[in-house]
Amino acid sequence: MPADLKFQAPLSEIEATLISTVIYLPAAILRKLPASRVRVKGTMNGAPFALAVQYRKSGKSFFIVSRALRKAAGLKPGSLVSVEFRIVSDKVEIPKELDAVLQQDNEGLKGWKQITPGLQRGLCHYVNSVKNIDSRISRALYIVNKIKLGGYKKPVKKKRDS
Image 1 (cartoon, rainbow, N blue to C red):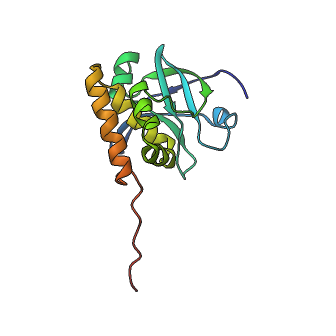
Image 2 (cartoon, one colour):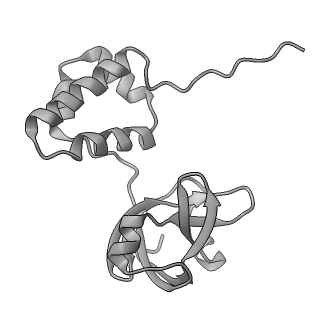
Image 3 (cartoon, one colour):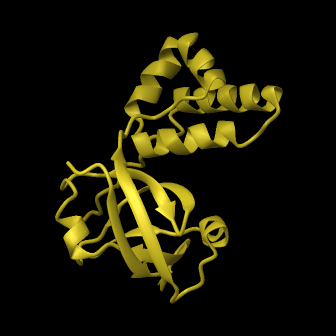
């Protein structure tokens, strides 16, 4: 697997819920990626990012470009973007506060292992997004209690009677 992949593409606007701008990956780059879910780290016009490749049934794959990343990279829709990236592990880095709570709560740890890496990553970001240690601990406790109550499980779709 190549360590570094590079390409240039325009920043595209799309109409979708919660997503406004993306960079489509060229077919030549997609052929070099594994068929499974891929997390990457790299730069867009020199601004660092850590993202997952988003796949669509249409065959188009892209990186979602947030407002913060657009600002850091100096991007506007239509502008050409130089992208460099490498594939990274899908392993979730757990904040020490959350890890400490999970290690003291077997039921919480069991529930943590059952949720998806994407959701785990989001919950870790939630804990890491505050600087105050007390707030980080409070958020870690909240997350583990919610896990134990089944708050992060996928809802079960009910079948309709015909």
